[in-house]
Length: 373
Image (tube, rainbow, N blue to C red):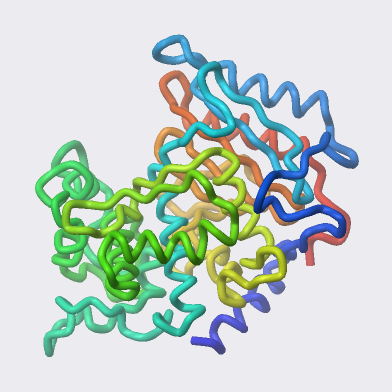
């Protein structure tokens, strides 16, 4: 496992990916509070204002803008923020599938401590019977959505796997419901987006940490909330005690930005390594499957989509991101030393419109000389 993680940055170098920048000298880490200031350098401020206005323009139910929070961190400083009426710096926002990226972080913490391994058989007791082909599945397969399990989010209405896991007959024990799926493809060969797979990873995390809900919550506080200063981060659990790491985490816009900054800074926070070396490069590297062009490890990657995948942001933006239903975004753009958070709804906004307008906001911040290899 260690050797594989070390090789991943080399693969990214060959692809011309941007370096992960370090925290600028003189800019304090936002553990207690964000350093603030105006956008720096050759920022197109008129384009930035226009793009921000455009994101807040669509108004949906209740007369509220679909975009409820928009925040930008450049060079480690909070340089732009705006909230819809009734929302503010302390307002918690629902993650939807951005929770999957929090699950990535929790798994990474356990890999760092040697309690999980990316390429060892995934520790799922139900799969350990002799002759069960699922014994070959690894944590890497699960995090990159290349497990081959027949539990993808596709399908319509209440009968879809994701609806059954979150709201239906499998919701009382999401891990059990997810783990019962049989293999549909050889592991590592086929990509399929799956909230159920995230619930399998969440259950692995919970069993490894131990202590039930209280144990998981204490682990998150010790290893993530306290070091980063995450004052609003809340995980939800199913009735069986499994974190709902596929879709239900709450945090303020500023705390979502802190999580984004952790990944922008290669998993290091104020001199302390939080995520294992190589984890962020593993996360932002497109998973190798013929039908995948835009997914890393529980994070999306702004790249050319494969057939049946959608374009994230505008073409030409180099970034990786947390992404959730109704347009939740934490975009991490290393070549701009930038984190952008957009939270809210999509009552009057289409995905194409949101991606284009968010892309315009990001492109108002210039690429930095020497950022790309």
